Amino acid sequence: MVGKQQKCAIAIFSFDGYADLWEPFFDAWFRFWPDCPYPIYLQTNNLTYDNPRIQCISVGDDRDWSTSARAFLNQIPENYVIAVMEDYLLLRPVDGSRIKDLVNYSIDNDIGCLRLYASPGPNVEINTDLISERIGVLQEGDEYRLSLQAGIWNKNTLYDLIVPGESAWSLEIEGSKRSILLSERFLSLFGPADETCPLPYFCTAVEKGEWIREAVKVCLTHGVKVDLSKRRLEPAIQGWLRNAGLSRYIPYIRNIRSVGWREGLQLIINSAVRKVKSKLIYVIQILCLKLQRRPTISKREREKLEIGFVSEVKNGIVSDNEANLAWRNFSKSLYADSKRRNVEEFLDWDVVRATMFFSNAAYTKEQMKTLRSSKKWYRFLGAIREDSYGCPHPTKYWPLSSGNLVHHASHVHCYEEMAGIEIDQFDAVVEFGGGYGSMCRLFHRLGFSGDYLIFDLPPFSALQKLFLSVCGNKPQESVEENGVFCSSEIGSAERWIDIRLSEKKKILFVATWSLSEAPIIIREPFIERISQFSGVLLAYQDSFQSVDNVEYFDKVSRNLGNDNGGNWRCAEQLIPKMPVEIGRYLFAVKDSVFR
Image (cartoon, rainbow, N blue to C red):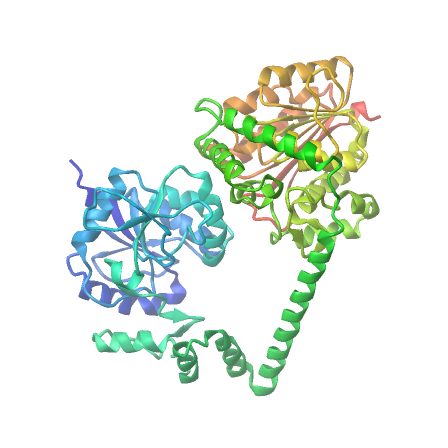
């Protein structure tokens, strides 16, 4: 039988630029944990570290932190890892017995993460069968639910939370939001980190490429050698500011040191101007909140709809055979939020912000710039004015709108540019996975007046019905009725489509990431019909679970291109400014019906 220690390994995240830290790190490691029973893996780019107890895993030239980290984890055979950074220098002897018990507990209970260094720690303590340990749960919505402090991780859980293109700091923020989609529990030792951690270490010995004075002092105290010829020591004034609790002034000192007093002061002035500008943008955003569209129905009608929404979400929690595990957990979280939080502020719920609402993503600025430079800008200008319902956060790039609505408008704009037609030339739209109904709202404000079907899982259909009703596009109750129809039943969706096809209506099929995140068995009924539609607007990521989406949608594109009777024109392209792994388009238009 394979022992549990053989199912877990030490994973040290690093890169060649920090190679000078490896010697003091491992000197301290084996000094304070000489009988470490776990395999030790060191992430490198191309260099190696000469120690028979260390297995170097090379990930190639450095692209970004997350891409390298995924490549590193992918080569570790063990199912669990104790994840640490290369500048977490051990301070005193490790309590190997406690770590063994915590590793065994994590494996036996299928824990996603058990944080060893409780910073930040949990707010809620739980009972476990570990009598000598105090453990708490990191709840959905907790700040830094994903932290890169030392912890025991299910390797696959950590891998799934890492998105290529993110820095380590972005991963902690965005990954914490994504973590609510996973079923595994996130736990942490309970109590002050320095007192409870069985792996006591100096947290972050290097900052901005310089040795922290206190870290070097600790190393010298324990006889751990530090080569200051390869990495300089921070100036004494920075150490003094840190010890005095004035760390916020350290960046100013660094600026002055790097470019001199005159230019350094200019940088400080420029920084102050940026902060004032940021405050002004914030004030403008607050003022623009007053200009958002107001609900088209009375407060009493809204409250009645909200009560119905909560009931529908409860009754519609996704079952095991309807979707993958992540979306089942999402539906449960949606119901939990609907019970304990204000429905009128649903766009601020963590589960919604993690999956279907983007405020100020890195690509929003470029998308807004493209829209404003377009000949169709004044057509989009009115359409992207946000609604107040849901409490959307304004984007700093156009405070009258949100990053999410700008994102949707960019999809439509890119499709119209490729197809050479406007969306109001279609008679009907089939949207697979409609979020909270934002795309449907946008289509109608851009002049679309046809029938609109949103097919989604039951809890999300309930959210779409609520939002669209408040915004003036109340969904219909029957497939025969014209207008918007929200369905979570494949049978009724197919009947809706058949009726429109029999009426010779030109149908646009829309799916932004939703189709590529669905199991194949759920995709197929729509993909089999795709040649019957008149247009296709798809956005997708490279892979989903074991599905190669690039190959999958390339096949869809080829099949449309080979449909000679339809005279399809297809285009596959990358979404500007988005990481290539998650940002691809497939556009298609049946030219024969628009002649």
